[in-house]
Each structure stands twice: as structure tokens, then as C-alpha cells.
Length: 115
Image (cartoon, rainbow, N blue to C red):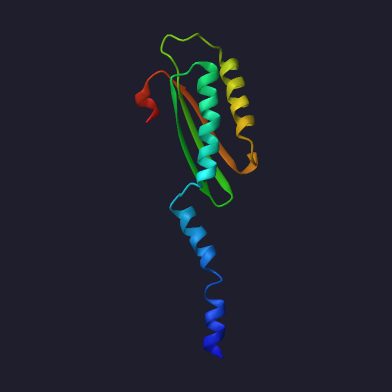
């Protein structure tokens, strides 16, 4: 009887353990990474940027997203308010639970800073 109980109970926490290992190893859910990349590609196309880099991780309920946009070196000058407005639009496009999201958005003309 004890062996039967063990066979039934042991597999139950395996899903929880697997999810915990993914969180520890910072394995990003593919759908989250694809969503972030899709939003970033739209921003690159709309604003004439050169490219982007996206780094995404899920830790527990939290999401950590770092976006770096590579802008043309001789592109139009923008004020800090314009850059902040663009960050706000990107944040809205990403959506999700902002209380559990750590979002960093950077702009650079030097591709080395994006890596």
C-alpha cells in the first residue's frame, strides 16, 4: 500500500520542480521572447532605427526585459521628453503586469554598447 501511495504522490511535485529549475536557470518562455521581439521590430521599423537587442528572463512571477535600440549615428536629435515618450509607448505595447516587470530601454548609436 505504501508503494502505491509513493507511486501516486512522487510525480505530483515534478512539474513544480521543473518550473523552479527553469526560473533558476533563467529559461525564457518562447512566447514571451517572441512578443518582446515583435514589439521591438515594430519600433525599429516605425522610427527608422538600425536594429535592436532584446534580453528577456522570467523569474518567478516577475519578468525582466532589457531592450537596446541601435539608432542611426546621424539621426534626428530628440529631447529627453521625446525619448521618455517613446519608452512609455514601448512599455504600453509590451503590456503585462507592470508590478512584476523590470523593464530597461536603452538607445545607442554604437552597436558595441548593445551587446
